Length: 96
Length: 471
Ligand SMILES: [Zn+2]
Image (cartoon, rainbow over the protein chains, first blue to last red):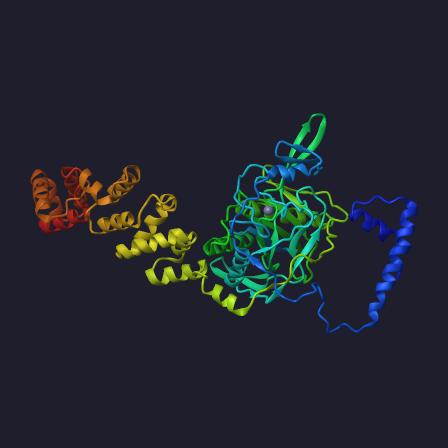
């Protein structure tokens, strides 16, 4: 199942990856091969099979609505490449 | 050409929980930047989200109050996109399998009732807040405050059932009332606890297919939603009449300019690549939990309006004003329980003093005593108003103030007799005139007696005594 160069570039854009021309073609071939491999599953009739999203079929556990402050803002900010006072500083988002 | 408008609304309501939806950080508004954040809600590696039970209960109760079907099994999904207010690079939401489907809300329009369908209700987490700092140290940057990340939201999606901006406004107000009645959302639109996006399109009357829709955002009051819809409908109709075509896009409402403005269309804006979140197992809601929560649903606004009108014999309009706020309706019922009398008067008083009632500075006794004293003729309407104002400024009980201020009307007939005799003796000509048939002179005598009593006489009783004396 071949995918197109445009699809490769689209997915790369969504993932914020910049691809050199040559690499785009190489990835197109590799991704196509992977998709062809997975496509073998289409030979199975899965009409009555509920898609499996999780390996175990129990419900999600809950927590009670209780506040427990983390209390170490510095630790969170320490991971950031840039900060201003107590905020994360990021490249300006252009909105127009 | 005549056009018909089609409106669907999406409401994002912040759920009234103390902690966030997937972590134990506080949801309190107005905390210092990033004070309410932790490794889970800032997307650090290796953390796991754990669902807040209260958030689920708020959503289920909303579903029950809007006649939706609660789904036994629903699934959390990741909505993927890059934006600095979203540290995980995905928002946990629900997509193909939301927690509730297929309900409705009844609104009142043009004296009738119209049913607006609800497509679905799902749970999701909010994103953080970006402050654009402008020019800083030669570089432009934005500042991210992640306090709101993972604050629990529910999204309520309506069917495209509304045909006018008024219907849109009526639906929003009714939905807002329901959420506040349930106590699942504080309803504060300015702080963003209750937000609305609108999908709006127009089509020639008679056409079955929908026109191309625009999505409107950034409306932070009921009035702004109505105004934005009015503007957008006019814009689309004019565009089509001029031979143009509506394009599918997101438009922002600019409240100052009173216009909607196109946001630049991002080519891939809607390629969110949703998939089930592997970190969260399906949400299983069994029937006994639903039934337990059904028992916690209070009387809803529409039922309350109907009951107040029926039980107290007040007009539906008045019942609607009272029921617009649960606290006001409760106050009215408490007042009416203390003094039955004419509930219409009690209703008027409650509406008149609404602000004080909702601020909690008036007690039901005050209104009950004010209404009772007026109806019994002990005080005048003017005195009643003065006294309630005094209650508010001094905090003293109504009847203490009434006696202290000497605002009681003279209603006992023996003291009125004396005043009436005095007035009649001083006006022999008018007495003669009245007896000769000039009935209009009665109000002259009433005025004279009131003057003699320095306003304290009960005008109704004065009239009665006068008629008896003159007749
Ligand atoms: Zn957190």
